[in-house]
Length: 484
Image 1: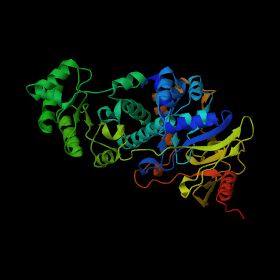
Image 2 (image 1 turned 90 degrees about the vertical axis):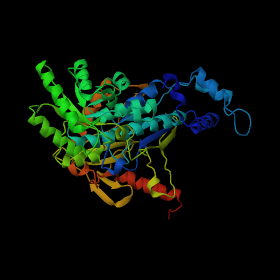
Image 3 (image 1 turned 90 degrees about the horizontal axis):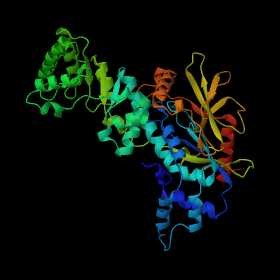
Image 4 (image 1 turned 60 degrees about the vertical axis):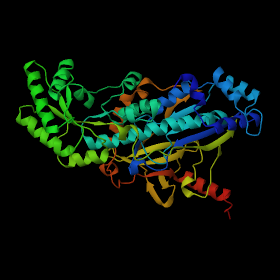
């Protein structure tokens, strides 16, 4: 999307609320919002944070230009007249963000109820950022997590090529970047390669083979055109015949001082075909020629293929990465935790509904991540930065009986500066997709294997610092009128 359109990447009610704040004299009222999710995606044991570079881009480019103001001025109210007042639009035209934003770094392993992003500033500005922030961070986190799950099972390089099946242009580019963060070795998306400085890869389609009079002719032509990047797709007509034609070309390339990199199989019983191809290639004297598998793969099919003993050198995965297949949304939320007048004291805010799972968290929050002596993660504590940690016991926000003592363990805090006074302060290394990929790889090593398994992963403890839990419980009781 164009840089001047970011301010309109929002739900209409964010703008109507903003006008309400403007008209109610709340321009000086400060707010603290937190973005988090309530359940791990894909029924897994973790998520990989992503989308912070996109959030930084949003903040860098947030402004209402002449065209945006003109569009808002054209909107009619359902009851008649214009929806927005001229004075409010004049205010938006000169608005410059002054928010303070802290976030986890991309590639960080995160869990339900961990604040991933904290936004502090005028309530009007915080509100205007909500929809776009959730859109950008939630989607990329979802794709990065799906990719990490796939790559952990693949145990060999994975190329992402889902652009043609992705959710539009912007979704396709963001998905390609997130897939790199999650662990993919490359993407087929050339524009993503340019935009994010990530590796691109690709070979040929079945149509290449069909464009020639026979398969062998097509393979020879491709080897001639790309002698240093020759991977031949062998299942256009018959996989066994295609493999023999590939071996013929491999011999010819060897005689010319070149080599066939790999063969790709895109249909049939992939495990069976991979085993047969490996046996045939080895017998022909080409143990160095790799085997690439593709065809609507995900973490479960990859695991099944590997468990069968199939020898696979790399994988091509598209649709189910780029679309985060089988979970359409992360379910990210953005909730008000505290407010204050000017430079006054922060007042707790808590949303209380009929659903216990939707009870929010009061305060200005951060996360402490504790570690066992062996370096593995031990638990996450959500705490109020203004009140500190009174007790290193965490309490499951959904079950008071589930508590864990983390005292004596080393820890780090997760939220780091992303923007100050409306200006992005992230260092380049924290906006770089390849650096985030390395961080994700390191972070996943901190998890126990039981927390990474596909089925029924072990639950990682995330809880409220004990005094924060008590404060939340008491505040909820008061708001429900249950105080004695």
